Length: 439
Image (cartoon, rainbow, N blue to C red; front, side, top):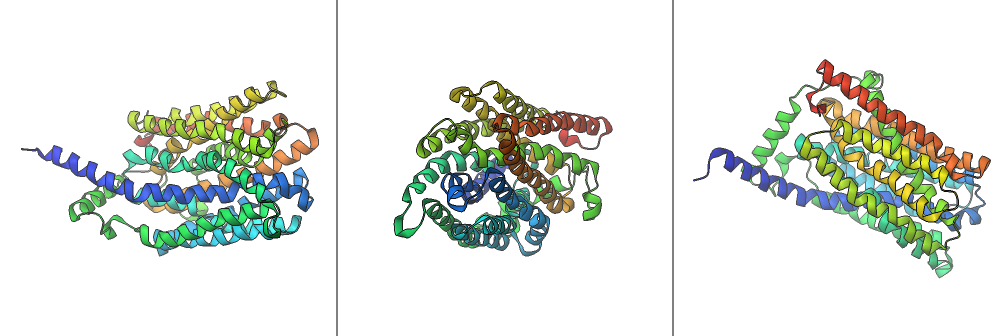
């Protein structure tokens, strides 16, 4: 006869398996296309910049404007998700950004390029923090690092798979009178719109509404999520003004900004960095996918290890220090393709391995009432810095002719972030602000 603890363990296992299989693969596919539609401009640039007469600085500015629109609409979007429900709001986000992304095919010069990137950022705003918030409704805290890491593996996979696909779509140049880069934007936007419509059927707002779970499973999951929500957090319910002046919030945003800046800047500029070694468009696409393929595997292993050990602090900090070291070492590999790819791989491994432990850590620092605005605010600020990094890389590259010099600001930012997360979590543990950050 099974004991009560055994029965509860079996119930937990069955419930979490069903929730994971229902939600995670679908959300990963959605995020995959979010990233493809966001970063395909990096491959479009291999043809588009010449057609539109865009300099490196102008391209960097236009690419970074995505994050301005994203920043302005991020927090309002997450608050709207809480009000209207994840099912409807995530569907709205995806359909809107799919339409705008397709319209990128019809830009005719620098100013229309700037305007469409700004609109694309506003349209996509709220998707990522909205999904992270949505996952906190369905997954207890003990599961979040591995779940977020698996969900966010869509980021490197988007470049791993998307790079060669985008390069191949450029070969449609001239078909039906359209340029290859125009086909790239149109064809990669269509799945996003279709997935947005599918959200209305696949997603469920809360466990209490999940008819695909048994009554017993719904009750267990709701009780477990409520128990996690009752724990004391470093950031309780506060106004937006107080939230954006809270020291824990600001440090978390700065820490996240380093990894975000690295991922964003390399997703846009890495194809051009590799193209500088004399590669063809297809060779560039294939080699560009290598660092992302490696990062896809290691970020999942890193997130699983963080959950298994219950450690968040060093898992977050070491990832940031790996970024800093990898980018700094690029200065010593001028003209050498293989070492440069290896170091870019190190930077991207750090940027993506960081995400699971960091978002698990930050979600425990905020009460459920503060999480909607807090998670969105962290992501909004981090992405705004990421957008600034894209533009800054273009400006420095145009001034110096060197990508190795252009990435140095990110070296400093990630080094500072790694040190800051160690100091912040040490102070919190000493002061007893949050047991969840303990090693």
